[in-house]
Image 1: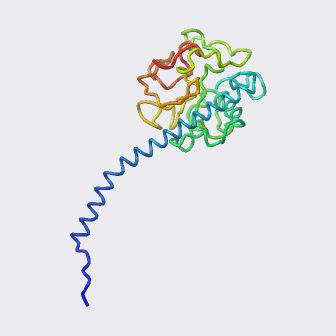
Image 2 (image 1 turned 90 degrees about the vertical axis):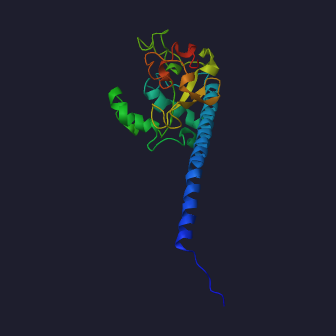
Image 3 (image 1 turned 30 degrees about the vertical axis):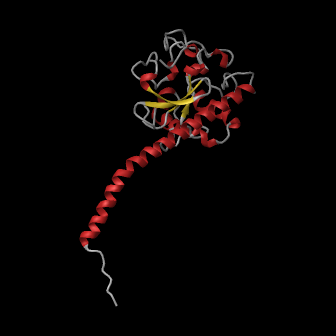
Length: 236
């Protein structure tokens, strides 16, 4: 009977080397594909949140989500971190849309409160209704005075803001993905996914975004201070 011949050490090392080369070639492609899938999912989340905003507005005299002087409402930072998720959750298709697949654990809202909350009188994450990667800009519930930005920001209006007050819906950011922090990085170093006032969501590069006031050094990050508030444009 013929004797079976096994692999030699040289042959085994050659096979291992070929596998290592193939892995080195395939891993970047797999990582790129995974990134693309996560970006598509994030944009889908933002689109669903935009639909939830429209449903909320339709059932609340056409007004944007905001509790205002009602029990539990508290301006900033309570509105983006508590009011908006609490008001949108009942009309959202599922809770998972509030979390970007590229976010860290803990999610953005928890990270922000732990990192910065105490500086703004918001010291505990226990008030947060649930983890959330997305942020509701200041101008959607607080008037911004002309081009002065923070000097002063303007009064909280006696009634909620309306979609009709957004002068350039396709160019005004309505919600931001802050996966992995306000400096971005969750998707790419040169941009981030955004939801616009007309309901469309898209990855937007920082170079295509107007500077904000009073934070012109961080374009595309702090949409709280879009020049002219709801009358302003976030895209160049």
